[in-house]
Length: 298
Ligand code: GDP
Image (cartoon, rainbow, N blue to C red; front, side, top):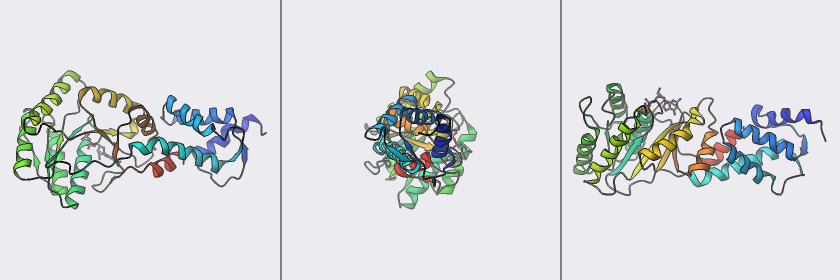
């Protein structure tokens, strides 16, 4: 066996530098697994998830000689296995109009995601209405209008400070009367006053149910993948505030590899409907567990 001091270097190559050419084979032992666990935890995958993935990798392989490529392959396969059950496109066209409530903290990418989704639906020949439900932030409303223009979709607004529930009611009435396929309702993202936000979201839901008892058909939580472990807290919080049915993970372009997605999938099992991969209108992609696992394993 090689000296123990070489171990972190090898694992560094496995996961960090992506030097995949090495033909070095070494025994998959407890030390190696422990280093893998540390790397997984350091990349925000969470302790429980890391330990379970490590146990799965060990199964049938402990004590065997493996190359770097083989270890990477095993790791990637195990990560993909955790992610496969949550990779689900947004379930569409179950209802007309389908009502999608979009929640998340300010800056997570709600506005951008709504714009991107609207554009995709328009491209598919569907009619879309957007309700600018963050009525307390004039800038948010303006930004949403910009995205609506880009996507060619009407954005319903209400005077600053007015009741978002009443706007949502009007928007659903309009969407229904016009035979729209999809209504997306933006919401406020200020977590500073949780009680307020909870009541606001509850009221929106209560009011739109007067028109369609099944609405909202989806409650999308938009999360910034670069916030690491913080994303876990946000899911916890928003699950208390709303009936979250699925996630959109933004900002998976750039340097963020999004290890936290693995922890999220493992802990909450919520569907990941799409990922944001840039700031442009077309930068929304389906979530592909294999691609994701390969990128994460590097
Ligand atoms: P909101 O406050 O939740 O509505 O967030 P915004 O939609 O305004 O987005 C906040 C910032 O994140 C903006 O600068 C967006 O351009 C940026 N953003 C949103 N989604 C993505 C993404 O997938 N990738 C990148 N790189 N930036 C994004």
